[in-house]
Image (cartoon, rainbow, N blue to C red; front, side, top):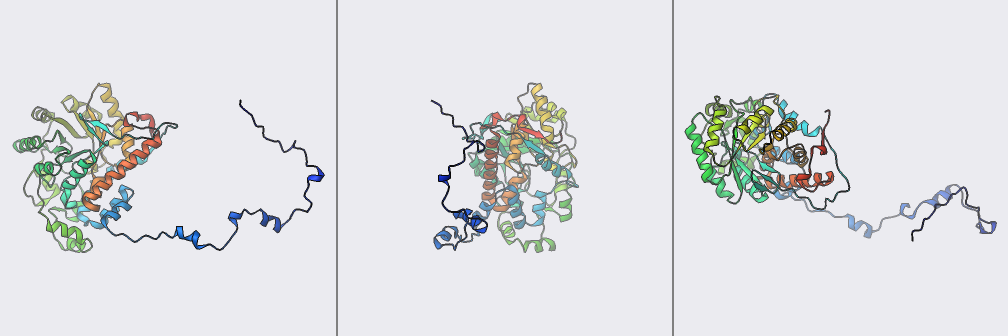
Length: 446
């Protein structure tokens, strides 16, 4: 039986009988106020037994592991990386083209959203796994291709590929990587290794790289199509950035504050490349001397016929081009403006994403939609997935971790992103990626 308890009404409660009144007068004034203070709020001299649990002084830790563990965000790893890396390599990673408007807008795009959570959902277990290009990935993020990576930190591509292997995610080696296709495959034999290709004017050398990638077990070829010429990366110009870094008076002075980087750089094998054995000169000169400004969709057709694995086109910046490369046989696309490093004021991939997703669905396309540029947290990744991305790629975020602590730093980046993603999804009320929809995200101002 259910019992209902009615609250008493002070206006109708009868007054107590005279015999129920206290025999003494109640205290008034200061005495009444003092008597009304709860015991827990009365001042007293603290006892040692009360203080002992609070006196948990820890021994200062200065190890790399402790330094990385204290970093709770990718931004904090960036701060560590900046302190430990000479200006030229750090700016090569951190910078973008011209006034760097594109990069700033790409990061602001992820800030200018509003999440719309659902409540009263069972989120006791969060599954971050997904399928991408026919295989599973433990997380919905992979490592993007980055050039000259051992210049940022001596472990370079080896650290990136091994961290990706341990995390169960894809790793993409750049044509301009500082470790060979074969060495990366040997360093991460159980990892899912992809190869990124720049098509050169010399088609025979491009074909050689394609054959080496296939032989080394790479299942995906990612061709980058937004580098007809080099972007104006003004930080590199100001720093006199060359490959390899030159020992000028400025760099020697800079090295005096970062001896560990120079010690590692000078005591390991000189930089070598996946595509050429040695090169001396500026980054822009290298790009302009090697890459083909005459590329057309016919070249993409040639690639599709030549490469038997999955083919992804990176550098898509319009809905029309997304549709066209899929029509020419691409299994996936990467919405990317090269991290803002080519055309300044280029379209922002995150803003382009909903329209591309809608267009490819209308075409009944099964092509995978990937996205990079501006990702600095797991929440950024969740937002991209909600708006239609199948997968995401990180470049700078991974390199910040690499510069902050080598392989351990890359591991820390992936740990931070995984924790961010799991927390964000739980707070949104979803337990798996397939439950994310555009209703979970609103772009502010639209």
